[in-house]
Every structure is written in structure tokens, then in C-alpha cells.
Amino acid sequence: MKTLDDYNFKHKKALIRVDFNVPINKEGEVDDATRIEAAKPTIIKILEDGGSVILMSHMGRPKAQEAEFSLERIKDKVSEVIGVEVKFVSDCVGEVAETAAQNLQSGEVLLLENLRFHEEETNGDDEFAKQLSKLGDIYVNDAFGTAHRAHASTTIVAKYFDDKCFGYLLQKEIESLNKVLKSAEKPVTAILGGAKVSSKITVIENILEKVDHLIVGGGMAFTFVKAQGGNVGDSLVEDDKLELALEILKSAKEKGVEIHLPVDSVIADSFSETAKTDVRPTKDIPEGWMGLDAGPETIKNFSEVILKSKTILWNGPVGVFEMDAFSNGTIQIGKAIGEATKNGAFSLVGGGDSVSAVKKFNLENDMSYVSTGGGAMLEMLEGKSLPGIDAILNK
Ligand code: 3PG
Ligand code: MG
Image 1: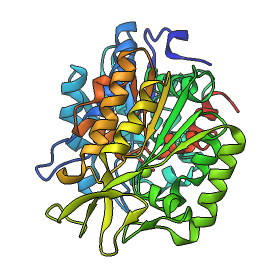
Image 2 (image 1 turned 180 degrees about the horizontal axis):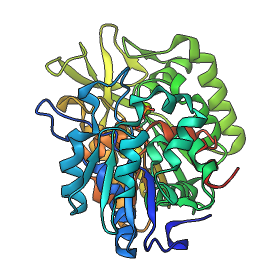
Image 3 (image 1 turned 180 degrees about the vertical axis):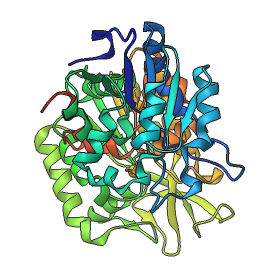
């Protein structure tokens, strides 16, 4: 697989697809610069080689050229993070973009306007991809978060380049995932949480082939507990998935995978921060009450499994961590993973909410790797190949 280190960028213009789809707050500032920081090593390598950098990204899902989605809003943040004054051009294709790219000198960085201001981007338009390709000599894809999209800038554009490679971030994402899915040291434990079984079915099916332990937490656990005859009160349940839950349990047994479900839950009389709370066995939750977090016994059981694991994958919180009253389970699970990691395990956290949780509770540095991808990560866990990755591999 071709990576940045296979190239010397001296006097070359690198056209880099980054994922700078970052949250912007009410004041118009970047709320979380993780994705920008994550692309920095790639940019710095190219500049240090004596090359120049053209950054292209989408932000949000604009319907037209809406100012609120202009990448000009993140220009200063990108400059600050990279430590180079970044130039900005008001379109990503056409004469203005081509002129700005041509005038770029070694050591300089140019940020293009939002790719999605042209619908050709998400349509994967060939001609648009060709226009983009005129801007650089070497194509670098470092946008893991968008690698599951077969868009013009993430996938189609690659065919117009002989010289193309993964950036350091995308390379690291792939390597980290392979450490879990392909060359994992045993025992391997996956912790799956989040609200719904239905959104994780394919992940579960794929992961059962790879793990020794599957910890099921969060809202989706109640469907499993109910399927086994438990009373889960008003907890979140997908009644049309009870059969499926039983099938998953059976399939796990056949494969020798141990499934761990919550045995007790922090319950509440309403979905609210100020609800009345109690702790009950998960299979014995009264009507009018719902489980919103893992209970103490559950935390103890889950932590024991985590601590004896050598490879750990975490996708999805085990409680409603956004509310303080129901955040303890997720915090404790995060801490257990941190401890296992300190003892030599490899831990990968990925997929939206669990990443937010890790950031919220300052556990980022305790994990081996925190992914920058949400949907992209999930699709890889489902065993799918991603078009953005395949395009670099010429598949
Ligand atoms: C993301 O944050 O999910 C990626 O940047 C991809 O964005 P999208 O889901 O709008 O394609
Ligand atoms: Mg998305």
C-alpha cells in the first residue's frame, strides 16, 4: 500500500482530501479541531519535503452555496493548528481555483471552498473530479471520516492520478482497525453500546467472527434481556428484534464467543436529568421505569472482562452519558479500558458517540487509538471495503 513516505514532495503540489467536517459553534468558531489536528502530520511532511499543499474538504450537507457552510470559517483555525498562514480560494474548481493552485509556492498551503457547494461532488461526477485533479501533481487521501463515500474528491478523482497515496491519518486508521480485525492478540473483546440493535446488526455479525468476548451495553442490551424473558419496564426495546437477539446469542455460543449483558441497571422514572433513580436487576425493571445506565454489578463484570483482554474495541456508550446522572457506567468502562491499555492491551475507540464520550471524560490519551471516523468506522466494522480506500489501492 502506497503511503506518504513513498514520495518526496519537493516542488510538487499535493492535492489532499481531508475531512474538515468539524462542528462550528454559535460564535462561528471551530468547536472541536480534532480532525484538523489529525491531518497535520500529513501536511507538515509535505511542506518539510519542500512541496505545497492544496486542501479540499466538505463541511456539512449544504443544499446550495450557503455561507454557513463556507470553509472560510475554518481558515484561521487551520492556520493556527498547522502553524502556517493558510490561503483561501472561493471555489474548489474552475479558473479561480486553478490560478490559486498554480501560484502556490513551496511551503504554502491553500484551502479550497467547500466541495459540496457543487452537487457534482456527492454525485461522484467524472468531469468534476477531472477538474479537481488539475490542481495537484500527487493525490493524497487523508479523509478517513469520508472514506465510505464514493464522492468525486474521495474516490473518482484518484483515477486521474498515477501518483496517489494514503495520508498518515488514513494509514493509521486502517492499521489500527487491522490490529483489531485481522491480527489481534487474544483475548479480543468488543464493547458495543448505543441505542439500537438494528443499527449494529451487521457489525455484530461481522464481529462475532473476530472476538472472544462481546459486551453488549447501552439501550440495545434491553432487547437482549427481554428476548431472554426479562422484564425491562419502559426501557428502550426493539420488539421486532427479539428473535434476532436470540439468534445472535445462539450464533455466539456456536462460535465460542462469550456474550456479556448487563445484570443490573440504573433506572429512572423519566428520561430526564432530574428523574428519580434507583438500581435494579436489568431483568426486573418495574413498569414506569427505564434503564438508563449500567449498574454497579454490571460495571464490575464488564471491567473484569476488559482487564483480561489484550485487544479491545469500543463502539457505543453503555448509558446516557450526556446526562450526568447516567454517565457513570460509560466513565467506568472507559477507565477500565484505559487501565487495560496501560497494562499492554491495544484499544481502539471508534464510531460517533463513544468518541464523544471519551473526549467528554478526558479519556482520549488513555486509549491506544481514537478514530476520527463515525460512519466510515462502522462500515469497516461491518466488514465492508470503503470506496475511498479502494480507489488508492486501484481496486
Ligand atoms: C462525517 O462526519 O460523518 C463525515 O465527514 C461524512 O459526512 P457525511 O456523513 O455528510 O457524508
Ligand atoms: Mg456522517
